[in-house]
Image (cartoon, rainbow, N blue to C red; front, side, top):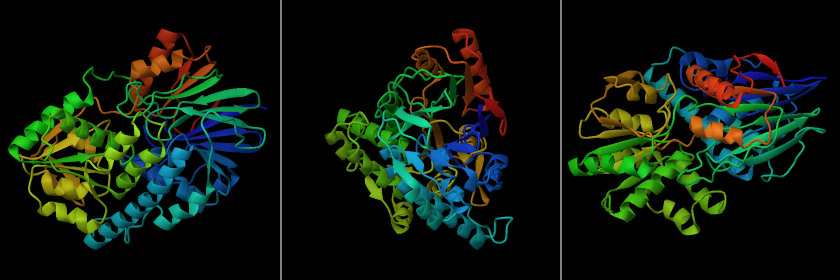
Length: 454
């Protein structure tokens, strides 16, 4: 009896990762992500899956970012009742991210209803904070490198992927087939995360391709960030830095702290971390020593090198402060959250600065800002973009094309098939060609909704 994979997300796009693995009457969902970016992609979140959630036996998550975990509350609400296998880092992060995601969706829907800019009456959240809380008991933590059975007779193993706290690649063994899911692979030279472990032997590989068509610059994030913040401090402006609450926020905090220790930035430059989710995540680094590069002292310093902003009143109060100052706030592609209020307030002043810290998916506000647009739409109105826009090229938490290929080369032998996923179509196809020409392996970019054998 064959084993096949249906690509329910992460195919031709970097969002919504969901891979349905079927063998006979049994099925497992590998990752359970939300779609983000272009509206046609976001609308997929509201469409029913081609399989009833109650018919899925188990879920395995590679990591906690919402494009890999954020659909889970809806899956459980719609009838999924099985286990969700995760690493301990992913479990701890999901406890923070998923309720926050539900809360933000409720807030955004309420804001749209108050101001009347939604086409829906009333605007509704995809799911609520309570929906997210209801799904958390399903999370079952498994140690790295330990074989477990997500479904009786199926074997799976997590291995370090770098990228963010708890991120893992997954080797799935079913019916004599070995299927390797890369998850999101980190950089071997990441500022705070450990490098990915070598890839194990597998028959089929699903590999991400976020940066499948480019290489990271030689310059590191400290070298890029220092001159930008020096200019900002000199002119007394405000830097708004949209960050992912998990990973990017902590890397930027660490980088700014290092620049202050080196004397490249004045120690008096105020830094604010305005994201309850990012604040809680920052504290987790002390609890997961050994899973990242930071020493205990450096992990503790993360929580003291910025003012941690939790309440909405504290967040609003930042608008009354004068520069220079730096505000790190979620989300990383400016798709929602408190960063939108800061962008709306500060983007129109040429003394200020917007610092983009990594990949900006097409269709997001971050991509609009990066494109050099004169305005960006926030909360139903067009906000003029007069602030200096700086796009860091070295802050990405994803491996680049050369690093992805290097990871594939660590495999003990060639797989039968590689599926190139989690990338914009151009990046995925470019990486497919490199796999074919440089490694001589069969590689395919699957279409959304398609089913392929393993």
